[in-house]
Length: 334
Length: 247
Image 1 (spheres, rainbow over the protein chains, first blue to last red):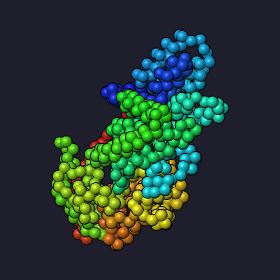
Image 2: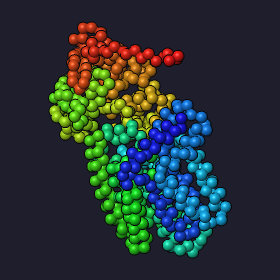
Image 3: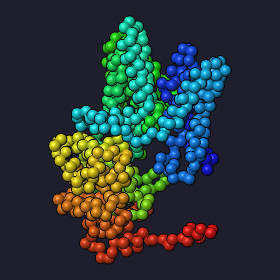
Image 4: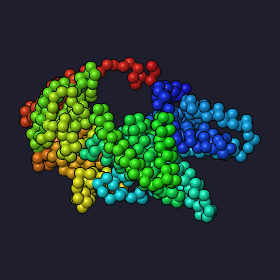
């Protein structure tokens, strides 16, 4: 029973991988992999990557949620599918190879245990479903688009990216309170790390919308840029709140740059995302360009001048206007 | 109120809607019928400005479907096939969103929301997220969204399907009241008994072409009989293995 399902998933995945652009990645994992390799905890990261990457690109999510429980599969078969399906993704093999290579160069069993713990989390997280009660507390900003912004805020709170950023933000706050003579460079780095954790979401702003929700956008008498602006407003609120304990202006500049580069993949390469997963992001190229722009804007705002916010706002607004038009064109040509 | 002239839509070599024309006066309820794949949804998508016609044109509430843009969207209320609901908004938040976007005053939005939720028997579910609603609740929410700003033209895709009989009757009565007050309703449905009681006009489409266009006054025999004759109901093939547990 599991064989045909895995074959069908492999076929679907292969169809998606026809182009280089189709390789989706989470920016945070890629960048931290490179940084932490130098910090000497490469294995820790790879262990996490092997587990967490499949969470963001879980092939099982291709199976409609209503269909999966109807199939006559035993618990064992469910586990078998969950264990085997991530290996359909070639990047999982690559990461596992790297992990195996790293293991030969360390004797730290603590790190192996940590990897095992992450592995367990990786299997538990997909079972979370539904909307938690705290989503009701999310307020609607005033104005005609308030309810849309509220909805978009809720969507961000349903991704694991937000909770990684929240963890980093809390860590930053504690760090700042504990160390009075904190080097200013550390403030900037931690701020950028928080924004980086949110960055992949900025590439898939419409990823959590159901088909039904996307259909409603087509019916609303709203210009495309306004629809994108409601997404941006929610993202910027989250980015600024999370970077408040550190360097919020740096965070804002970085977030604006992320959005300016994220509108294109969000509208042109829309990929469906799952709740309670890490954002899969868009193409590798988009992720690299976006990360460089974010770092450039953030570093400039921190080290040189906050006037960098002006071109960042203009770029974000221009991109929202342009891709707002595209959004309507794509919708109308369906 | 709806005027359709030689409307055609092709997808590559396939002609989904082929040169259709009809006129609907204000205050009419038109039942647009036909088998699956006949071109009903394509026609509705063109009339609501969601899909550009390959040729021909139509006007809805005095606006061309090709150039009406956002103004057309403000003049029409739509119950789309996939309902168009956001998973992360509750039932009442959908109505607040609609009221805000269509420029209703806050107090009007609140009072109309309460009234619509009461009439459509949705009060118990007003705080439920759309993703947690039953299919009937979802349909009623989408219908309430189409009604709350009181548009002059309504397009309803299968409003009576997946609805309990009581609410179905309520919707039917609401539509009759709307039509009496001048609202034009264009609906698709497969529930012939209900639309026979409700509609003032009948249009049947088959293979992208209109095969029957009539008013209720001209209908001189049961709608179901007329429909099956027009559609040429095929004999059902006998599958030997079906239901045979020993096969």
